[in-house]
Length: 380
Image (cartoon, rainbow, N blue to C red; front, top):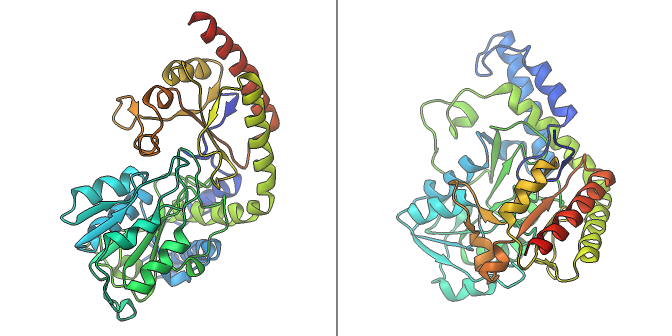
């Protein structure tokens, strides 16, 4: 039984508001595209959720397109624009990085500082400046994508600065806002990006639903074709219950932003406690602006894989800084880009907290870590 869930960056626990909204929506069984009364009732559920998500990220409701999740949204952007060039950082999520490199576009990667922040100043040196008029719906040939925050270290990225450059020179600008949503205020229009990816389950909504927020005037070809749903931008019958849960979670996450200092306080307590156990612990991206909920730390001489197993046995859920999507443990691309030495990267553990995290969970982790750390040192 899990006694401390500290892995919110992987998936947040389902909020009660989302569960209730989904339960109510399940009683609306009609297709939201049908014109009869039950169909209109289902459509009302979808559009109410769309309004809530738009308000959450400072967008127009007409700009919110529901997808199966941020992976679909990211793939759509990377492959749907027929780009001649894509500029990205090496710390982007796999759902950005892999389709970009598998596309026919030329891909340029910008460097990352040792604190895990993308060096967006390099973009000007990588590009042949153009003057595409995006206001007329022309996507142009160059796309820039930069995440709001890194999922492993929590390091915030200079998205608004990059978007200003993109607008000035006629480039398309996308941001993967999955980790930032509900943890930092988001305003789609103020950021100045053309597209933004979101995921429901990172903010306490259900899995399997997300959104692409796309400026009204941008004519991005449909990624999934064969139906008129989502204003003909994404075919497929809408998952009404999941969308309802997404909307409720967005509304609750927006409300919880007012108490983000509580989360920051718990993170501070965690990091002070870790340093008290071992002053040699390295907090990655400690000197960079970070999400209030994320701590990625490394302990020289410790294997993260072993520690994760022992923590799991103690009922504590955290993640490592190793790549695990293929079942193969290796140094993460993000830590490699930050030039973290391999032996240190192999010991990296990520703790990510959220709306339901308690001080007791933090204290339970610290007490358990102290015992495991001492045992590991004795064994060594």
